[in-house]
Length: 79
Image (cartoon, rainbow, N blue to C red; front, side, top):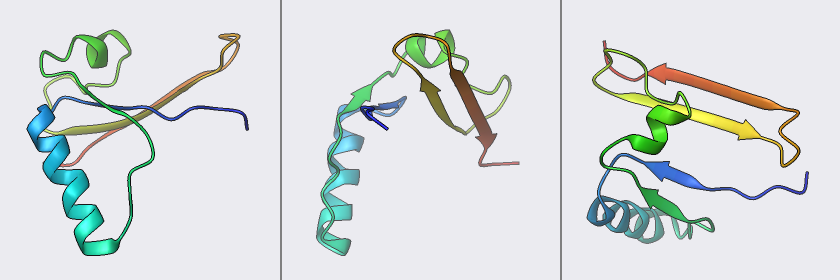
């Protein structure tokens, strides 16, 4: 598919470190892509990845380099 994966997150750098270490320790899996701290939700908000009014949102966004294709799927993980 000739793409690069990026992991933007509204969690802190320290949360990312703990999360990736936990996955490595428990499952022997190394996260092979960068995780980017976005505590102020500026990037997530700009790309429509935060569900309005939700306490906890997860989202996946795909954009082609030619900007001909863009897709954002988001879902609330709490009620």
